[in-house]
Image (cartoon, rainbow, N blue to C red; front, side):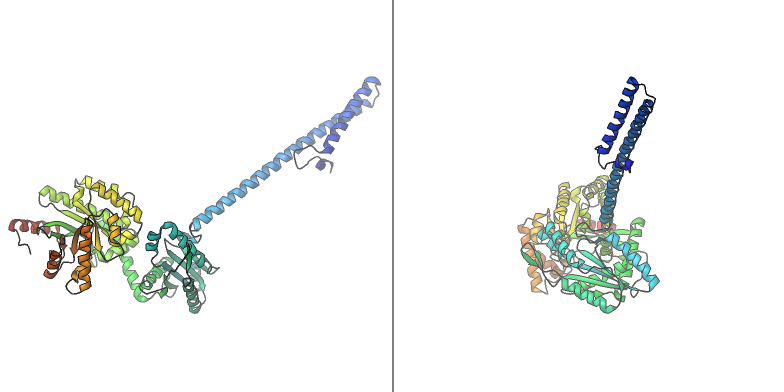
Length: 528
């Protein structure tokens, strides 16, 4: 008790300790004085006792200081431990949560779904996976700005979170795509009830900047084990059902079915085959000529990439480019195409055979790659190809995504000397105002309009309007889908600059193209 009283909680000496020190000093002093004056036998004992007390007090004080240092060290360790635990918790939260919405991210969701599937295999329970996509979000995001789009996503996530519990987990899978895992699923009726609740979330407007914003969503649903039996297939099947739901008006949902299963199987085979096709160089090019309407000469060609599929034969881009976009291979395929075109231009130049501009299609994602400009410049330099002989055709719909960044890439490509054109103009969501702001020198009219100019008045009006407005903006116009004499006569009458289609020529192999152009130049074919 005495020793404990010597150890105060702070660094100040206790009153008892001070009194003990004073008492010991008095005893030593008194013993010394008595020994000096009287020589009594017990005075050495008094001095010795005082000295021992002093030593004991010094020991106690040392122990007290050591105890204080130990307590300080423990406190510092506790603070450091708490800090590290907090940091670990923050890292775990960052690793598992989407930073914008606070919902689970795709990586965490897939781990959770894998675990649920393993458990369900053992217990025989059902799982439902729901894929949800906001209709028209990308257009809204580009029109109103990314900050506006982010606020909208946060508001949607807050509503979705109201449906979360121990059996339901939402995640933000990508920009405006969300997944929901329902496990265990008691019965189909409860799932339908949940779907109705999801639809109800979109019946009420979202308040955004003093206005009400109404949203709709496409929803795809897949069940385990009824439809598929692994996590990756659940996601792929839910997205396939979602794409089918997107064809219906309003907020609606679509259950996965066997027809979708067959489509997914074919798509997955394309996914796997595309990797092999790139490695084994199973792609080849054909070139469809573009005729100058003023001279009748073939002045440019569009490169069309075909895939020599080992089982399905020759496949056109329409059969595999959607799968390439989904797997992230579009950029690699485009790069391969530009390489093949540049090599062909070099061969033609060395033989003195052709002096043509070759157009290559871009699908959009390539423009999100910061290395694109330098990569194309490197290909042209290696093959000693003049930039003005390689034209880049950009799909119209790609203008609606990442507009500012893609505009910068196109400007950089244009500054290299590459001509830029917009393909399938009139089919998608781009406007002439957007085309005006992009470094575009030519628009290519959607072939469906051109093919109907003689049968549908409205289409003929649209074609005339595109030609007129594009010319007023200083751009040239190519009519694609010119398959008959009537099509050619119409676009010639309305001063279209170039024509492309079966009436001019089908797509040709490189040697055949060189031969045909040689015959045209030598025979001076009659201009229609």
